[in-house]
Image (cartoon, rainbow, N blue to C red):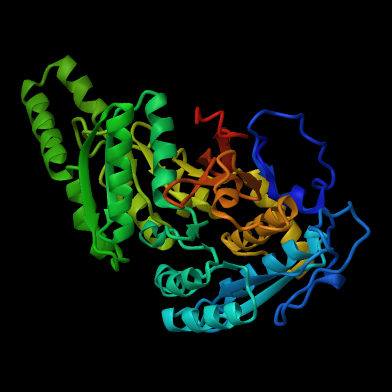
Length: 447
């Protein structure tokens, strides 16, 4: 069976300007939009949305005619994360319109960003007849929604990346730190790097990164030579300086440099004088102890940490910095210490295509996670198109050949967590460069 394109299957078409792919065995289900919206025709973002009927490809219908399918959509539309929730909902509305199926109805519900709010939102959506729930955003909210949906036999596709809430009908569409770290570390090892270190926050996220690093190194070869952590709320240079200094063994290496300079000065011969001159401008001497550093941070703290690493004499041209999806933000190349670093993320051409599409409809650039809202709804639409009578069975959702959306190919494994086909990107002064493309099918991954 081919990979299902959840966008294209929903509308029986492909992205405008693209050529149909040649048939490939075990290719994912594509979720390519078919009917671009103009800004003037943007669907409302506050009321439940029903896609307009379009004279598109003929629809698959169960005996007796098409039946309406209600899709619960749970996101924070109030509270601290209302802006992200609104963008997720707008992306979902765009997918509903693109589906070309006027029998799909979106049931938006506000979770308020809390577990209690998510439970109330789920109860409301279920009472209104939701056959699948998309969302909520946070793990505590997903945990609160799970038993309510399970009691009705309704699957949940949450946007969380906390593996602890997956299973028993709850699937996670969020990007997990494990797969990002596995991808970039495996690539680094294939390029000849064998000694790995990690500098991570002392949080559940940081611990997940370390576990992924250790598991990947154990599988691929090499060694983890140094681990260090910092408080999860540390932000300033003062908070982080001593930790980074110890992580780079700066004191010992600086001491070794001073001792070498003193020894060369005492010799006072031509060879020693030349060697002493070559040490001008250096601040430490000796092997730092690792070839690559996993630095799974973002924002100001990432910039602070990378600057401190350089300050304490880590040379990015000799010791590669490896990041997570948090690196996937514009302007990262403005930080000198991050140039040349590698990280794993979704195929940038697809991400850019979604952002352009979204901005053309809603007149603002979406947050990075908004594409999850589109892909989730497009996935639901594709499943309905594939089997209108029983679209949301576990076997349909966990199709091993996978799906293809704006974040590349993905599938839900036995653990109910989405596995993505990620690209490896390199940070450059002017942006990012793809140095290892994302796979187009899970067969390319040998799976």
